[in-house]
Length: 281
Image 1: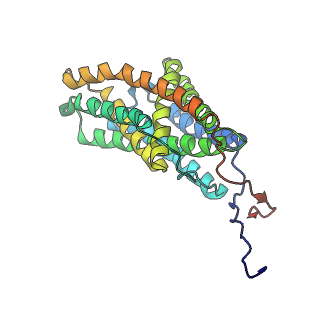
Image 2: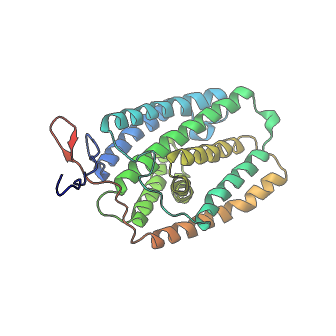
Image 3: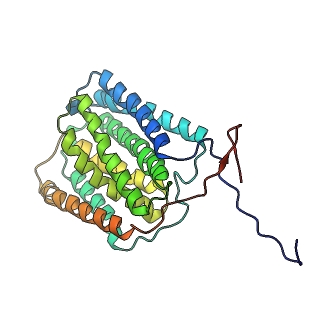
């Protein structure tokens, strides 16, 4: 107390065990890839047959993704990073930035309407749904969580944080070459553009749960449409909309990077790490 007035109290620093950084995110990423891609490889199911049946989906997708999820949860529980699942501040979004996530939802609905549902066994659909939920959880925790949190350190702008996170997400799909999927090179570009919409889902709501839900819904429809597509109006509508969605994603990414080129991405002050693994303000 000085002159009858209270001195301001600094907010406590995050109690990180290790500070968010790109090298740490890279280690988390590599371990995740070794676990998930390794288990997918030894499942004995070819990439193009992952979702052909309940059994193949369980062995080639559900179990590897569940193991990857355990790794991510274990790391975050140990590292004690803040702002991984919820933004420290709500960034402006505006109507234009909602268009891409909305278009992705519409395309997913059309894909689901364009299926021969009578050819799917209930167990098959439920297993693909579980795999999709796990993809949404693990890949969003990794990219729009761990990687984005790390990119928001180091003095980058939000535009650069978005761009590098998006490119990293796209590049991740190159690992499908290890699963004998030659189309992985093309997947890099489509996945990166899809990642723009997933970032916006998180940004618009302030929580990664929205990105997880959109990712799961998008993949659920994509996985199933590759098994038993129907020849109907919904399929035609989806085929027409696909290139428009990716074009919109490309434009949106450019707008984001340019518009956010001066917005600081930093979310929190760097704490003073102490020997016992805690932090002090």
